[in-house]
Image 1: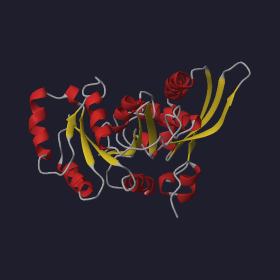
Image 2: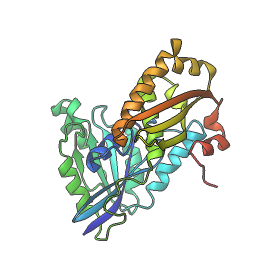
Image 3: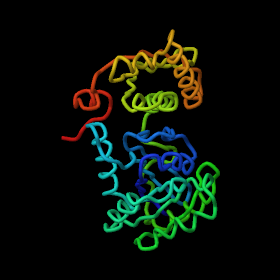
Image 4: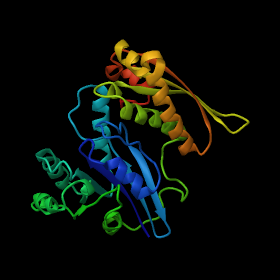
Length: 294
């Protein structure tokens, strides 16, 4: 039986979370077209009778600008040190950048094998794929596989390549577990996903979501009470919108996502609060779930 851990690493917005969701067959991580969507390591666990693969989704690689971003980059670096395989994800649509190649060179020098997933091939001209793939020819990687997670193109081929590189072993997690994250974590993330999709520029990146209450009523309805924490009063005004319209819209989208995730009706209450510069405040980072290591 094959069983092992796979660190999924790459530049911000390369398609890592979308690929993991497709491979696992469940919504494990939120997705959006904006960088910094994934803020911490999330496990997605694929279990079949003959194998178990533990995918470790990581924040995108980029230069840290505040304590939160520094926390995210450490999550990625630490994850890559203790796995059986590194799956390096590159955005084929944007083209291979020098920073992709320099980061790959850093990982290929280690003892952990590296496999490359060349993503978003469904939205790039087919004739450009070979000229992009040739850029990997001088690197010591175990393979480069063009894929489209959205279309399911070459996903089975990628899965087979991953299994070939994993060791023999017993299940790490019980068969019915698909993630290490709780329902409470996913409820917060679903709200943050909708904020990323709704708002532009810095606002969604300066937002934290705090879960105050999650309970199930006797009727079966889930009661969810959340705070949206932003950094500036004018950001709060934008999130709420004229006569509260923007907040109503994003809350409605979030409630629909929560109902789909939980499989039950959701009664959602949302408040917006301001905590200036929370992304550089160690105490607030810890309170919002981004605990820095000592």
